[in-house]
Image 1 (cartoon, one colour):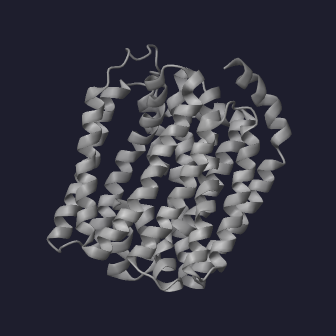
Image 2 (cartoon, helix red, strand yellow):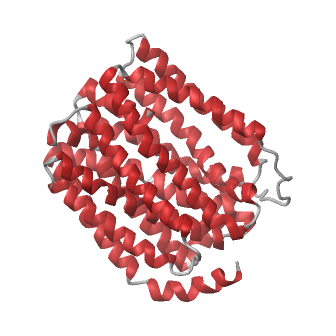
Length: 382
């Protein structure tokens, strides 16, 4: 809800596609720069206790934005600063949260389903949140979205307080922070499947940001709608993503997951091309679920494979590389495609992203046989 409200408020105040891209850039560029350090941190600390800190810090910008919006004093620089602050917190919270999954379930046997259900929770909120935000924006103002988001962190803190977990594993990484990042990068680069997975996730994230950050432009200027149309489009994308992760959750095995990733990349690229051509709201609503479906299947499936093959002492750092590729690269795409849309129009920018996504998925598919030879022994063992 906060993401929708912030994007809509930026566009309402400025009317600029570039400013939409800049807002997304401000919120996510810290992840590109800091998520690897967040991964090192999550390999060193008591993850359960650390999440109390990250949730408390995440509450602050939502509360500040609510106060400014209710007072009618919110300006663009306030929105950019709040997005940047939350981006810094997320740089540490996201690797911590992902690595915490194994602490919760206690067994790698259940890890793929846990990752899928975690993604289902996230994308369930992407389905419900935008629709509610669209209703609230059409009836009232962005301030209520910010306030409800601030209150939601209290529920998260209460949930953490109710958890009773086993003592964390001992012997976690204690090396120099930069050396710890270097070890993870060397491992990921030296293992071809992980290198290919992270590369495809980075590409899909870069090009997919073209449609998500430009969605207000499509909702208002291309499709002739308003905040409600915006919320519906984002909700439809969330519905497709939810379907993707539920598909992962019901899979009986991780064998063949890399083939699913290639197909998902092709699905996302095709969806982006078709969305760029649509001028009818009903048709756009029918297309965007396939984009969300493809993007989340690529990201969540890659996360599953990475966590399955990662050594325990390096799991947080390797997860942070995946997060950097997925969330950290996104602001670069938002900025680049925002500039492209400013110059050539939003449809041309999204079509370019779709074509690049198709090329990347095809290149990944050409490596499937060699990847299977390296991954299958890991699947069988773990």
